[in-house]
Amino acid sequence: MKMIEATGKSVDEAIFNGLIELGISIDEVEVEIIQQETKGILGLGAKPAKVRLTEREKEQIVLPDYMLKEQSSASEKKENRRNDRQKNDRQKNSNRQRREEKTPREPKKEYDYSLEAAEGNIAADFVKGVLERMGIEADVLVATNVENGMRLRIDSESMGRLLIGHRGETLDALQYLTSLTVNHAQKDEEYTRVTLDTEGYRDKREDTLARLARKVAAQVKATGKSREMEPMNPYERRVFHSTLQNNPYVTTYSEGEGNDRRVIVAPKENAK
Image (tube, rainbow, N blue to C red; front, top):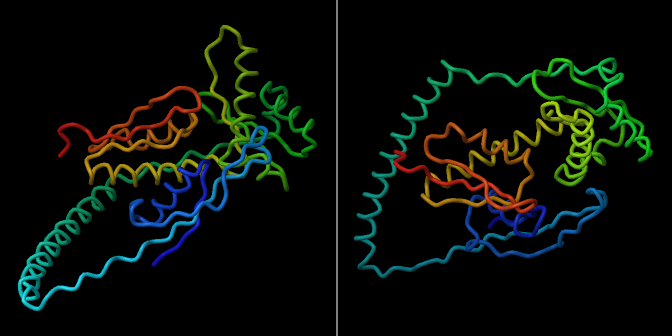
């Protein structure tokens, strides 16, 4: 019997995260709410919801003697079918591994950040001004090898976690305000996407979301039923969509408005 504690932006999300970790459904656990979520200002002082999930004991069924022989025969057939499926799965995995070896994944792009590139940069000046008003000592660097948009990184010895906030809410808010400042100054020019990072949070969050997307896609493929995710910000939704855009079994789209907009993962029609 397993017992874990899980957190989330809401109680529902905390329960969902716990079920994903345990790999079981809601009817197989007892749920205890440890802490309700609380909201802070720009993410400061916010606390996530926390729940405890305890796996329920499976019921023991005692069969009469005259049924044991029939059950044994059925079990042998079931075991043979399971072995055949495992053999086929191993063959598929081997074929997929060979394909992946021929076409290795493209490594993530490394960005070259520098203090020199931040000099006179409107986005960097805005971020530095906000940090100074918050009483945070930090360097703001700008990436020089960005083809589209603008990337900035905050380097701080001790305030990184504070700047990130719960699930990146503080960092997202600062990024949003920086984007408004940059695009307002450009007026009629083309929209510039601004990405703000600290302590490598963006890459770590992207990896977490990508793993969740693939896990949910596997569940949708197995059940044939759509899954509705918790509300996400635009950055998180883009990661979900891009991770599954080439999946042959599922498709994704967004529903809802504003802060309630969320990703739907649905089975593709005619997927084999």
